[in-house]
Length: 194
Image 1 (cartoon, rainbow, N blue to C red):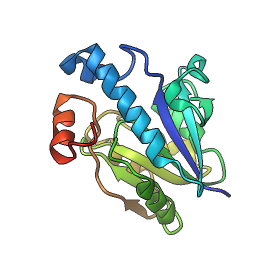
Image 2: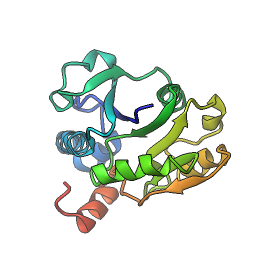
Image 3: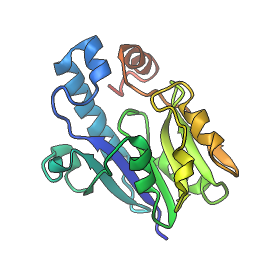
Image 4: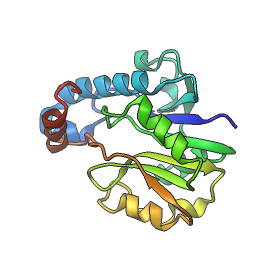
């Protein structure tokens, strides 16, 4: 099966994305930052070696977001993150899911993820906050993989890994830009990113 990359993304509507960051920097600035991150991630991860599909929320935004142009767009499954991720991993073959919160991600990171899936059950790109910016699995997967996971928690990655039987590979750790502290850390490390 051809490798598939899913980008989970929210439509860049004022006040609907990056709400924790907006608390620190204001809605307008958070909105600008989100559009920049969204655009960078979408542009940087596409490659002819894999299919790139944008998983959108809300569904009514499909076909109406400038940053998503040129990508196949599908609605995300409904519910919490567990059923949305599970829906992404129902197909056979290597699948990677990323979000748009880590503008450091590169095409090489995605290629490294698919390469790691040849030898491992799962691959993760750990985020500095205890979560992950990438999850890769060879599907289809069982629903139990997301059971008991504390989302948006410092133990999120550990919770998911505890449900996986087999070898897990880690890629490099990136900064998940969700608040002002993370934004400052990213700018200190990579000023050109945002």
